[in-house]
Image 1 (cartoon, rainbow, N blue to C red):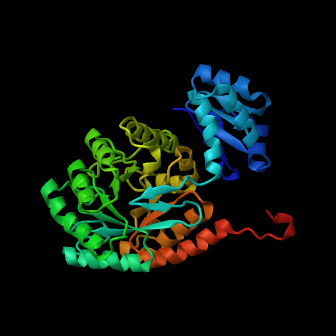
Image 2 (tube, helix red, strand yellow):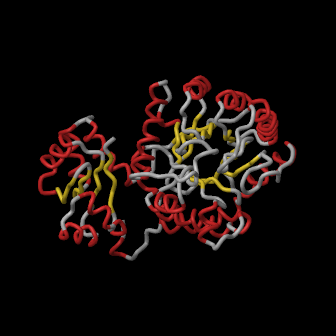
Image 3 (cartoon, rainbow, N blue to C red):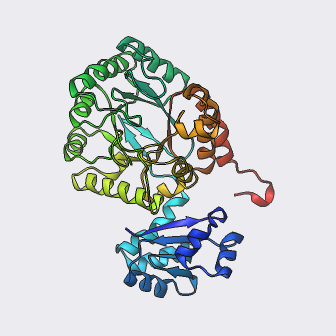
Length: 390
């Protein structure tokens, strides 16, 4: 697929410039930050020639499947008017999606506005073997009480999961997963009928039973790969989140490799969204998640967090989960999951300040709420004095 991704001064890597064929003068211009630049990838020989002709003097350099162009809102609108809904035209037009959050969506009858604050998905793991809190909630009553506590602490939605997807985890049977999650979902909705509840599952049958029990969102870590899962979403009217995962939990961390981790994840998520749309599921019922830690090295994870804003190109709310994950422990010198709360909060605050995420999935809701209060406030700050008035 063709993607046009905004470049910033921090993207000045030799490998990038070698790929795009940018001249030293062009590199200097990008680094100056004086103009907006985009990296266009996935080009064929024909589409590269078309792009060069289209943008004219805005062409900064190109080589192979990649090019760097200068752009503005006006130029993008002009290019799209000429190209229409061609692959290149759509790719260029999506540059404008990175400038603002997605349109409001409705989940469980509640309208969610994006952009004013980053929302919190609290984790309710009903599993004996999750990487961080496996076995902490031994029965439905404990899980329900924990979920209600997370809501009281500021969670906007609860994500109930009955199958661990930690690296190396084995699948559990459908019956066992149902036994774990259905009483919890029913109990949460009985105690707090207005609660938004998500079911974290790869199994269409579990998703269907969970929606019937009261869940309004299906969080599918396998990326909506199964037609049966799409049928469940279409027939129930539930919302869903498509996550990127390389392989399966059993294999995903066995030396994950990418040529371009950003574009490959965009490709996979865009295909998932298109498959859903082809089954009658509107894109405004779908969220996306890059799958931090799911078939990615620590460096892949960090790069994806730095480039989280690229996910805006998909035009869907962005969910990201970094809570207590192993790459944070590596950054902290090997600290255990329970010791990664501060690092998790720092990560979500940074994401909120940059504006590249709409929902964060976390274990520690109270600490996250405080971190997001700071991150969101930084992003929304407007008063820079009279000269900066808007």
